[in-house]
Image (tube, rainbow, N blue to C red; front, side, top):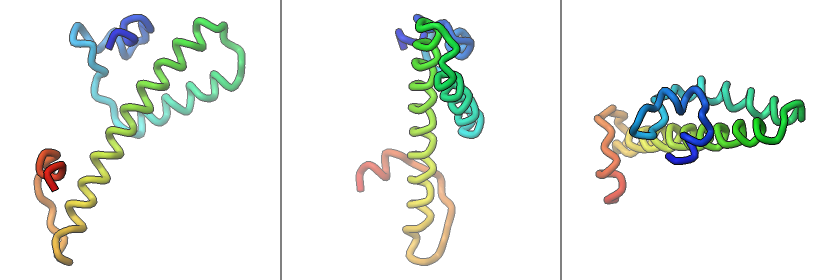
Amino acid sequence: MAACFRARTPACRQAGSEGKMPEIKFEEALKKLEKIVSDLESGKFPLEESLKKYEEGVRLVSSCSKILETAQKKVEVLAKKEGAFELKAFDEEELEEK
C-alpha cells in the first residue's frame, strides 16, 4: 500500500516491507475509527495532519468491512445447514463458487 508509506502512521510503520496493515481486531479498529472521526470533526488539526488521519480512517473502514464480510459469510454457512446448525471450517472459495 503506497498510501500507507506516505501516511507514516504507526500502524503503517509496523506493517513492514510488505505494505500490509497488521492484523487488527474489529473492536480495536472501530475504536480507532471513532477517535479519528472525533478528531476530524473537532477541526483542531492542520490540513496535512487531517489528511493523514483521513487516510488512516479509510484503511480502518476497509479492514472493518472485510472483517464484517467474513463474519457474515460464516453466519450464512451456519444458517444453511438444513435446520441443523453445524460449525465447519470457513472456506471463501467454496462460498464464491455457489
